[in-house]
Image (cartoon, rainbow, N blue to C red):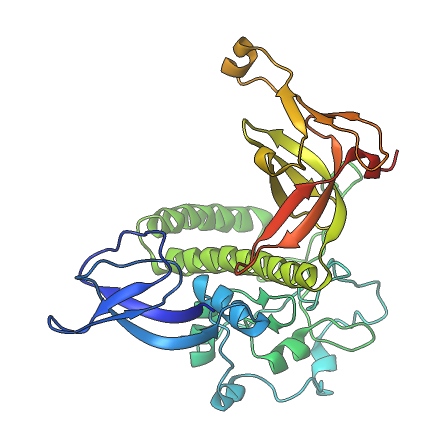
Length: 366
């Protein structure tokens, strides 16, 4: 079986080849081959194996490999980080003295039913110069949702304190707008009382000044301000976390099919190519490619398009001619975009990939 390794390389960039091994040169006299992923490094390449991730194929190892491949930090928080957030969700009586009590109002989150954290409504407290916890959270950038677990961006205890769970009292900040059905603010809308002898024109002047400051700050961020670096890291981590979640779902799907194969499913055709056609399995959303050289024996095919259509990249239809078999009559099947087909899914040997084979159209329900 293959092994996964975490590796740091240096000196020169490798050229990926088809082999599944890597040649690590410890010195000029001694050479040693080791497997690392699917790349083959040239003789002069020097690399250091930092960690043996484990044998390929297992759920735990493959999940860990996905997280490392996407550079996602899912390490647990150290015990000392607990000093930077409350120990529990108990609300002091003094809090009710100056806060607006919204417990009897219709307050709800917009998280989907599948959400593991109810955190779309959040509060924020500005801390002087930040804390070590702030720095770690900025590095993590996002929560990571895998099939079997979730790795929170914040400490789990803090997530439970902040999460807007139904029936539990929580501290929150709210913003209210009064608007008409056509999304306009009413002219007679009740505005807050202005204190200190100021007038609305004074507020307007301040707002316009703040707008100019915001524009200047935004321009500065585009020139390398640290805020942009934090935002860029968050965006990158969110993208990586999304990709890791998708890969985790695919990993579990492959293991499920490996346990129950062959699995027969319906799919919808999305594209017809010269030597194959692509389809999406309706029940899972998994993309599969069916190759024409992998059709059942004696199945013939032809394309319904002329040479000019092919040069103009127009949509083509594929016609399959299924012969008589086991008492079944011959069938003429047309494969075009959005055609519903039957596919048989199996896991490839020695690989975490699925193989799809087209089923005879008699198996398709009308």
